[in-house]
Image (cartoon, rainbow, N blue to C red; front, side, top):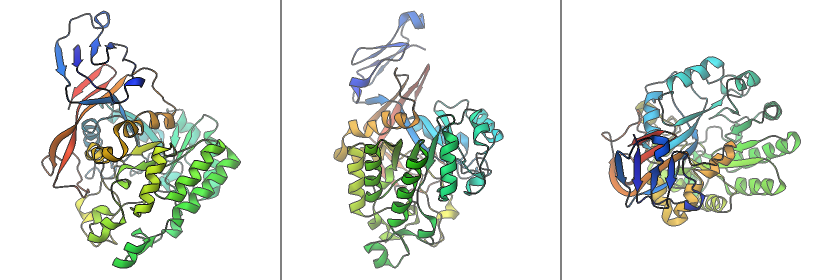
Length: 413
């Protein structure tokens, strides 16, 4: 079906190059008659809507295989589409972990109908335990270029060093959720004034800071490409900033909700605020914002982690960490847009993650179109996830994705 998108306003208009089957006039995407061999059969008025290159999420979790009741691949595909993502990196923490060709083939066969392009992050060590290596070179033959243990850090320096060395054979990237587990042991939230006041065991900034420093030193020794996921402290930002200036091949991302909440929010003891890394202080949040502005932090991720009712509705110290973050992603951007502006936010979910992946688009083949002003209620009726672990559940939000374009696929949400 040939469609004409009228009154289309791109946020990053200067970087827009029309898809091969379209002509972009500055206000419209018009199908090329020579390509479609027929007249436009539908005109879509995009007045009042905003558009950008397709959104890319570098950190997203499913629970299939193993815990499909939390999030199946079917529900995740619908969520990604509804939330505006045309590309996502799927983390390896399933049961079994994504670590052999069987899991790779299973994921590919189950997601062929997705409009969202799937990129697989395979486990670097078996069962993501940081001990024995997976068959990294063999997995690469099945198209995998990203490795890492997802929720678990590669805290063993020998394992980290060897993975970086293996990946250089084919230009792969190590994705690492970096922190020192022993310094975070039994921790429930950020260590600071709030944790002291409410009497909860804290996780110090040090747990992340020294792990980032260690990993950078290993990267200096081995070479290769290292991507830090979900950083949360000002010291981490500064260390990565210096490493980039030094010329190391290092990149970083931050969870969207790390920019929206702080440790003050945990005073309510709502387990939906229990995440890893924990929500830090206002001071650390400001440092993360500066890291986004100066390019130290390359991308913003959803860090979508579904947890079922039983995993969250219990004593805070027993509750599982994690927060879903796809349907609330655009509303979160809307809340941040007054502080950071749309051009910067869109950069961190389009060209920023594309550079991390080494997949910068030269032709605009993916487009996300959204309404930042549309109001809706996030509740049981509207929730498309099989889990509901988000503190905004039951509240009114602003921001709805309206259309997605991915190659020759066009979807109205």
